[in-house]
Amino acid sequence: MSELLSKLQNSQKVKLLLSLNNIVEKYPDQDTESLTKEALRHLLQNASTSISDDEILQGLTKKIYLNKNINTFIKRKVEQSNSAKPKIKCRRRNKELSAQEKRALHIRRRRPEEVSYSDAITLWQHWCAYVERMEWHQDRDGFNAQLNRADMNGVLLNIIRAKNPSHVGMKGVVVMDRKCTFTIVTEKSGTKIIPKAGCVFEIFWTKPDEKKIQLFGKYFCIRPEERATRRVRLIMVPIL
Image (cartoon, rainbow, N blue to C red; front, side, top):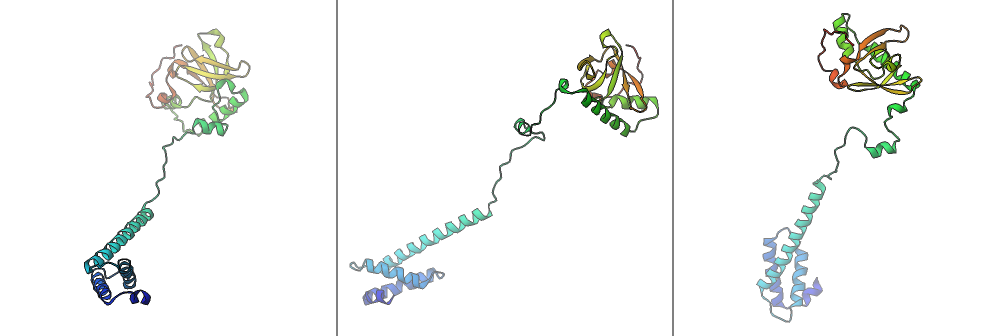
């Protein structure tokens, strides 16, 4: 600092002091030493020409103003980057697995014709446990209403009457319940599709007691999801 001051003339030193006093009053938070160095460099660069106090003041003020703007801009950007939470893009997903995920996990829906009779019997045992957990009404009307709403997938049935004579005597487990048909798996003939209308079925309730109940297929010609909520007619004429 002393070497720089020694290179200045007395008039230039006076100009420097005047400029620094004005700047310190205008920007009290600035470092006086740094301002002095900037003013000295400015004077030495223009020592060959006469410069006024206003020019020195203008040059230093512009320097300080630019530095202030840059510092404010950087500070604002840093605050914004710290305060802004990273946005995580997440797409809506269905509850079910996608086809790609199912292939990766080797999961696929088995077709009715791929179900063996031993697997079907296991399904019937689960159906018996499902039926035993239900609280059945003691009166006939309440029992019929509950039976109509029960899930028929897994029931073991026997066809005792049918318009098609070849269907009579078939016995199997229902693996698919549709609006107008039962898909059953038999022990010898494999998978068969039996129409509900025109058939009378005998379902086996439990294995130890061998309870049997007769069902008229025409009253079950309803989609399973609708049958669970639809009101049942209590007066039915059992006509094939």
